[in-house]
Length: 242
Picture 1 (tube, rainbow, N blue to C red):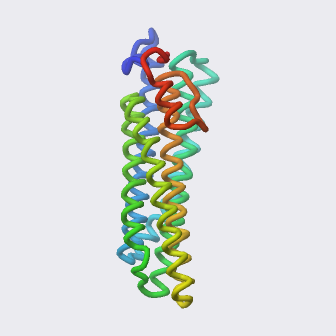
Picture 2 (cartoon, rainbow, N blue to C red):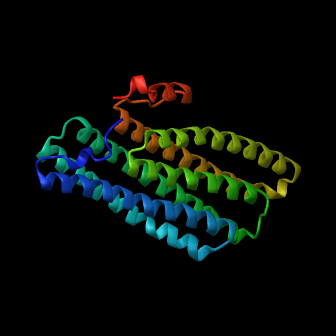
Picture 3 (tube, helix red, strand yellow):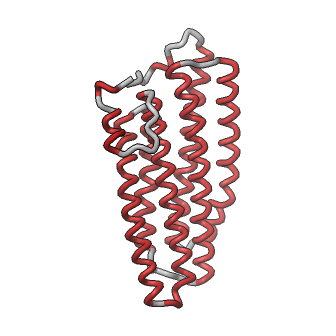
């Protein structure tokens, strides 16, 4: 596994500082995104349109952070020409910021559904699923970022495993909501809003899994995208570590 202090071992102190700053910036962006997810879920459950509007208006801040970090990565690649673990870090950061930006987009979509549902009146059906799946994906985002901060491939694997649980819960919730709409056609409009919100939450889980997979790439030097959890676990075994 990669040494957690490997990025502090360069002869150039300026390069050390640049790499530390790059990592710090992506974690700062991640912290903001995690807050956006939590606020979006809360705005939906509490029918808080003001909070929902704040989530939507803050999305541009996340977009600006993505652009800034991408420029930072491009500059390091051009001027420093990093190799080995340093190159993997820059690549992982670049990819992770894209997923973080998309998580922010999905949080904004959840906030939009909160606004529309509030305008239509309360619709308790489906809110239990929103609360449960929402907490699961928020935790996935936080755990993926923590794994990134600590270069912890084992913790990242747990995030990947969590995504399967979220997918299963999402499928169950969607089937229940479809049944509810069939039994009460008057609920169709409101339940569709909840289904769209659930879809965004499920997508947030997918993006958190992606970030976890970049951590595994960073720590083990292996691209494990589109592989089963079993195959990923095999790559994390001691004999396969980079």
